[in-house]
Image 1 (cartoon, rainbow, N blue to C red):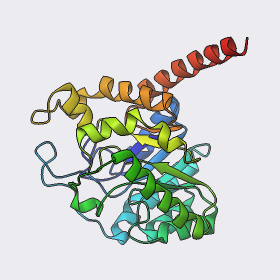
Image 2 (cartoon, rainbow, N blue to C red):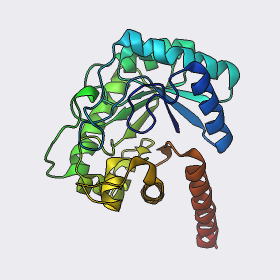
Image 3 (tube, rainbow, N blue to C red):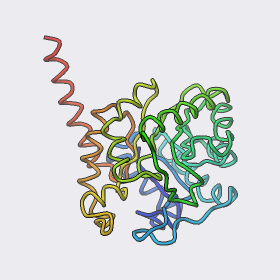
Image 4 (cartoon, rainbow, N blue to C red):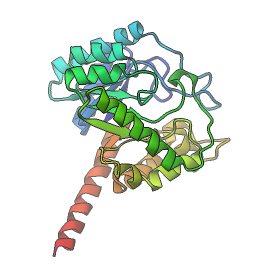
Length: 277
């Protein structure tokens, strides 16, 4: 899943793809590099803090639709084989994007602020991603002390899945929300024990790409390495996540991630053949 932020303030690439032409060019590049899904976001979830400044501004549904729907329309027209995901927690935005040709809804609030995205997904027969995070995206970060970060998040995601299913969504994907209000240690534990999420019986999506935990591990929490220097750390955690059961990887860096996944898949295939003999 390639990330396509059509926002002015995303933490990694804000403003680079704000025009339809620039977004379409980037979409085409990611498809050429091997992306199967394009995740289009019109509202940043950039957290507050030393590395990112004041944090992301809240965007109205109308403005989010103005940013994303023309891009969805352009991609579905010019790249008809691409699978398009709309990254939103607003039902109106999800519905408008699905009407324009999007195929998946990606709700980073896990339906905690209403089931509008679930109802839209159900009406269009679209899969829904429910991610774990606390509070509203524009108010991040959210400090929280977990007694058992994996168990608590798994319980929350199970509730999100039930809410989605009750709203009529047939296909639900879960995302533990790497980086969203968790400590560095908590994020690393999520990846180390990702198989506990896979045991919920739903496809698992991970979004590790360029996150602050990677920067902190490669540098320190007070002096994380810059966003542009987090590729190899992101790939390392991605490899572990896939080995632990992740089936969708959301990334800014499509080509390196695709190459990583191809090698992992080839090695896994050899291992399965050897086990069978």
